[in-house]
Image (cartoon, rainbow, N blue to C red; front, side):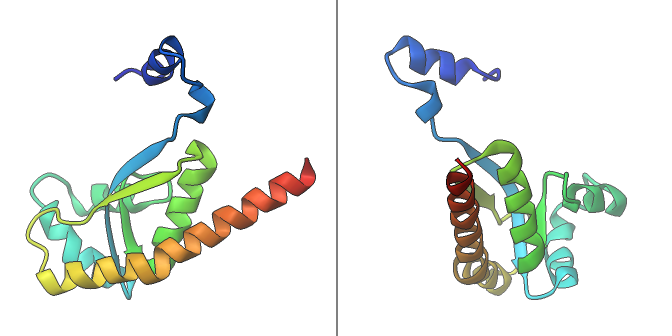
Amino acid sequence: MPAGTRGRCRKATGHDPAQLPVGINSHAFVAQRSQDAVSAFYPGYAEAMTPEQFATGRSLRGALAVGSAAEVIEKILFQHEIFGHQRFLAQVTVGAVEHASVMRCIELFGTVVAPAVRAEVARRSTARAALG
């Protein structure tokens, strides 16, 4: 859907486009160490992407949220500064990632990444409100 289409549709049906929640979706994988995330997740991309392209995708401005919890937190917060999204959907099962690794990724998202992102977004929101 072209940019702005949802907002125009909501406005035409009596909804405030400013209240439209924003969500983003990313292929994502979190591991204890960055290299462990790459080792688990890259094989699913190997036929479509060179290691260099994968590394670019993992960069702060790239489309992949793959790395340690700290790296993924940094990336989501960076994206939040740009998009102001309320939702983040992580696609963690690309290719044949071992089940135990996927379960650990989900655990790290729920116990480390999500709480840190929520806390920082709330802190930033409070700081902005205080500034007026």
